Image (cartoon, rainbow, N blue to C red; front, side, top):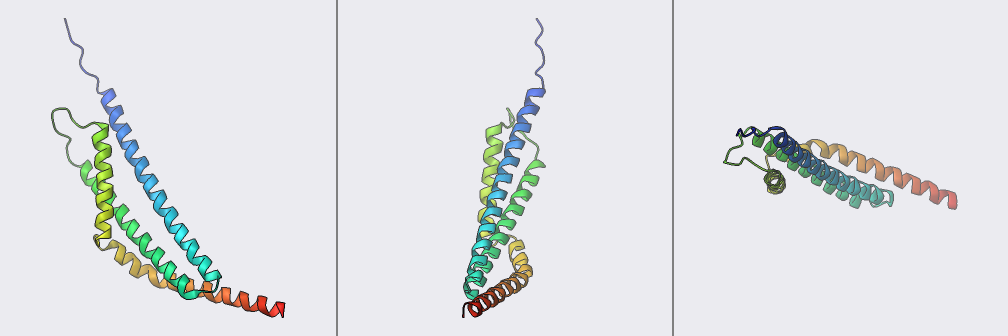
Length: 157
């Protein structure tokens, strides 16, 4: 009696499923961070339109800091994922999908905590580079809103 060799096809399919799940989770995480940044930016624009330029500038600054920190966390997570991909899978039974998904989730959380603790400096560098542009934009929006309010007040009198 001869035993047929195990096919590698189901194993490859499982690995692709774990990779696809990891990519989907990363994409969803990025989409969530992007939506949070958009919402914070919209809040700042609403504050600028209401005429409170200081509050608008503070909200824009806070949104920029959060976006830079989120970008750094995403970058660190991608770096972890690529480093993990270079390590040969070992062990008696290899790795299953659940382990890969757990490791990806763990890496994502470690990246977020690392970015919150100061990270590798990428978020700070981005913030320093983008802050002047955001400040100018917030000031311009506040001036435009003030001019519109003044024009509307003049038309009502």
